Length: 217
Ligand SMILES: Nc1nc2c(ncn2[C@@H]2O[C@H](COP(=O)(O)OP(=O)(O)OP(=O)(O)O)[C@@H](O)[C@H]2O)c(=O)[nH]1
Ligand SMILES: C[C@H](OP(=O)(O)O)C(=O)O
Image 1 (cartoon, rainbow, N blue to C red):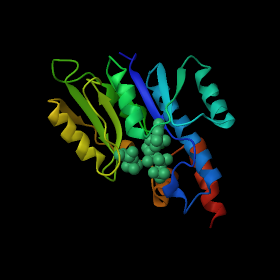
Image 2: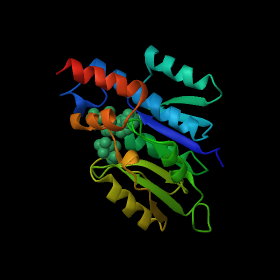
Image 3: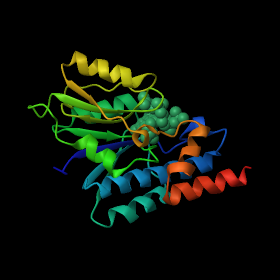
Image 4: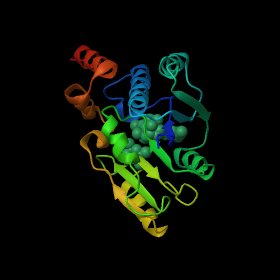
């Protein structure tokens, strides 16, 4: 059950440009590295054994070090580089997958083990492949998808991607379930989103945001 093919799209270079009013480029780089580490820890805690990081470019030494600390304890992380845009890279990944795929964005700083368990629970319908489960982002995007039929489903991120993904499910005759959760919906796009980390987050990423926001006061 836990041998679920899981992928995290990741863009390490000049990440999170919409956070530029609050964080310098260097701070944004650390922020996404900590956020990725947090997402990986949650996946590990929920029993997922192997994760592919689908990265737009090579990871730097600091990010590599963070991943090494997590993967050393029997949790396998594979880094795959694809320089194309997000949609092209994820669709190519899906085309090469035979089994259901869980896609988790790297900026889910409040993600919980319960979110992953709910996303990957067995489909309620009889067939294993004709379904998709979506966790929407708070602003109309898509934060996670569990795709039973990766060979037929095409992702189309950006803009109102949650709506587009529901329409794609309908076009492909897939049963679409929605995972509604404050924690899964909380992607970190705009400076005000960082307050959610202070209120609801924990660990290294909370300490980091706390330090930055206090320094900037
Ligand atoms: N592989 C890959 N991942 C991407 C790409 N663009 C974004 N991502 C990842 O997809 C997820 C959601 O992306 P966004 O929230 O738009 O992140 P971003 O592009 O760093 O942020 P903005 O510059 O503010 O749009 C995050 O996990 C990113 O790291 C890309 O071109 N290729
Ligand atoms: C990738 C994109 O992310 P957002 O811009 O909504 O954070 C989306 O969810 O479609």
